[in-house]
Amino acid sequence: RQAKYAALREEPAITRDGQRVSLNMNAGLLIDLEHFDLAGTEGIGLFRTELQFMVRSRLPKVEEQTALYSKVLDHAGDRPVIFRTLDVGGDKMLPYLRMKEEENPALGWRAIRIGLDRPALLKAQLRAMVRAAAGRNLSLMFPMVAEVSEFIEAKAILKKELVRSEGYEGGAPKNVRVGAMIEVPSIVWQLPHLLKYVDFISVGTNDLQQYFYAVDRGNSMVADRYDMLSSGFLSMLRFIVRESTRADVPVSICGDVAGKPLEAMALLGLGYRNLSMSFEAIGPVKEMVRSVDTSRIESFIEALCEAREHSVRQQMRAFARDHS
Ligand code: PEP
Ligand code: MG
Image 1 (cartoon, protein in one colour):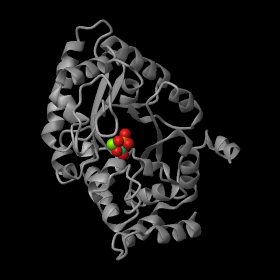
Image 2 (cartoon, rainbow, N blue to C red; image 1 turned 90 degrees about the horizontal axis):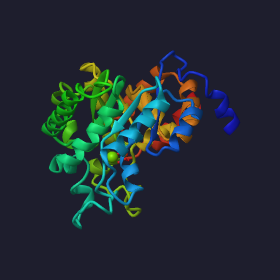
Image 3 (cartoon, protein in one colour; image 1 turned 30 degrees about the horizontal axis):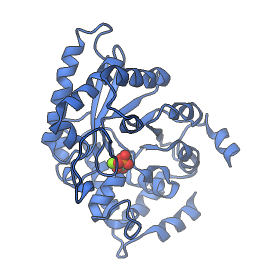
Image 4 (tube, rainbow, N blue to C red; image 1 turned 90 degrees about the vertical axis):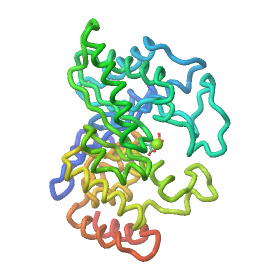
């Protein structure tokens, strides 16, 4: 199998009906950069910056962060990279950041909430990203955006850093794109409004599913109770892709489902054409992409969005067996 996927590395991710699909990789540690060259992927669709913070015993200084982000951009060259600002709290703790015990950490002080309450932390990280991207492209996104105003506030902090960067040696980034992760249901209900302010969005289905069904993603007693392949969740994903397409805002999926061939097939049927996943998943997902006809999946998925039963996994499996 590995040899088969290696042979696909240089092959394009195009469906039978000629739809081009962008397959990207999720990363977070420098070791991932080695996989980047081998995976046969276009770019890094999600760089989880918090992993670098979690492997340290103290807060990395701006210079250290700058060096790290530079290394990632140097390595990527012309391939696009999307940095995500610090997504700690919830299940990801930093030993050196004083955080209170919380009764419901997943619903607590995490991600952009920390960034906005402790702007020095977010500012330092944004400064490092801006410096690292001097003279080149910078794409970044904010995690756990629940309100349009949070995005606007975070973007204003970035704007200040960009103005500052004009005085730096090396100058400002060439082109800056700022996005929001869609992983809290409240922001889905504000999507047409949010889409006026963002350059792109990326759907974090891991958290979105957790908050959609009110199910702790790490609790084995309930984690498998609700299926992403269900009419409710698929309908929400369909709404997101339709709204962003209508507003002409690029949309991608960076949650784990993007790396599962069956789920990814459903995503193609909904209209998604940009997926980001772990490097091991690129080969299997590319193989699936090259074997399908999206127009056939589209009409099938439409019907599944009206299904009476909760999980439509069986139907999806049967479809995949017959059509790929
Ligand atoms: C997600 O929530 O789907 C996501 C990609 O972010 P993380 O898994 O890092 O929370
Ligand atoms: Mg998330």
